Amino acid sequence: MDVINKYITEQYALYNADTCELIRDFPDASVHFEVYSPPFSSLYTYSNSDRDLGNSKDDGQFFEHFRFITSELYRILKPGRIMAVHCMNLPTSKERDGFIGIKDFRGDLIREFQSVGFIYHAEVTIWKNPVTAMQRTKALGLLHKQIKKDSCMSRMGIPDYIVIMRKPGANPEPVMHTNESYPVEHWQNVASPIWEYDHSPVWWDINQSDTLNARAARDGRDERHICPLQLPVIERLVELYTNPNDIVFTPFMGIGSEVFKAVEMGRRGIGIELKPAYFNCAVDNMKSLELEKAQMNIFDFLGGNK
Image 1: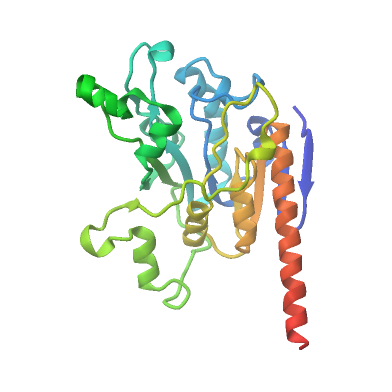
Image 2: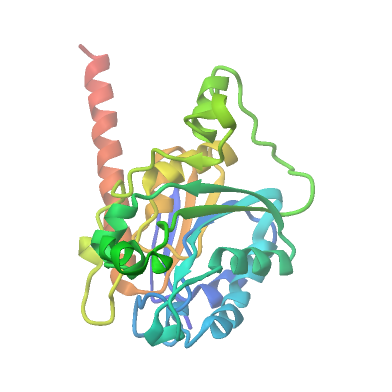
């Protein structure tokens, strides 16, 4: 499969293509940081393409397909550098799975990454409001009426996770911060707003709706769900794990959130997206960022000539 479409500037490159194929053309150890949300196995349908990981018939088929990408993600990442993966454990259903419960998708991802050579480095739990989830999904375990009927079928909300994997080896370009650029107080707040109490590895303050606008990517019956990663999450990860001008790569670009934030923060971005509608939305988002930066430069120029 060739590249269907592309949009390239000095700061970023966007490709409408199959990551399984295009990623093989990337040089070894050429990427500084990888950040993405993978398809959540067969939970959601993103497109009608057989190449889409979301169209797997079961978890086994999903991970068989995903292995073509995870092995390449390991190869192209520089030694000692980080891959950050946004995920969640997956609710099951009687219709699809034969039982109501939760699948350890997060753990399955970690074991897959370890199998290709990554080191399980750390993780962040991102708090999500269970009331919002209940209102959106009407999940049986979150409904108050289930408490009255039989609370043994009630459950807690499902958080998001950022699974942080590291490629073995010495980092050839250390990511170094100073007390001025990354003070202790800032690190404590990023690690946890209640650091001084219990060193909790939980980000409590992420606004789930703080994402790039996804409405333009909806294009028909083949698409039931779109869940761009929250911009504050990307910002914290890029700030912590990259240097200015580093290459940030996302193999499942969607509407371009990871590339958008990386470029906004002075890094370079590369993204690959299979679905044309998402790719086009990502291009529009990046063009909007270019326009915003150009306007800021003009304002700076005018301000300097007052």
